[in-house]
Image (cartoon, rainbow, N blue to C red; front, side, top):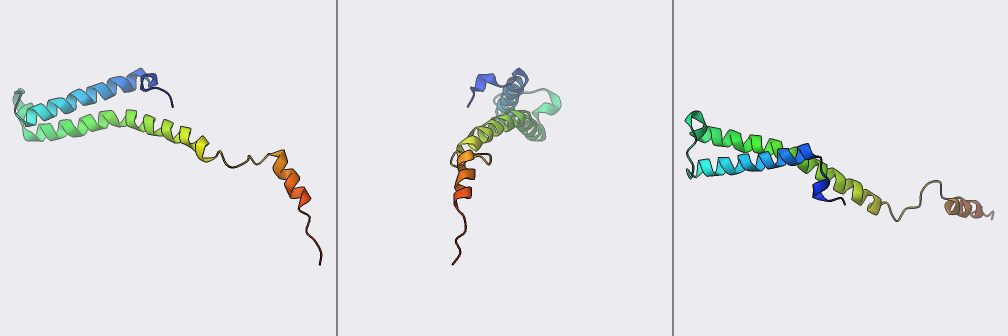
Length: 99
């Protein structure tokens, strides 16, 4: 599987922005920082959490997709391809016997 650094740069920025927003929502909900105006409400913290998750979903989707593609070859390794000559030769040798 490819390295995490080989993700598109936009996805890495979205992931970082989502993490920052998630930390900001956590610090706001614990009242460790004071945000101005409407951003200091509990509803704003909940909205920030959902928005942060939405920002991080594309990168997670790409990682899962690459993992599935990589493991797909591993799962199919025990099956010969349909165009395999050895398989066709075996089928020709298995002539039904008459009793």
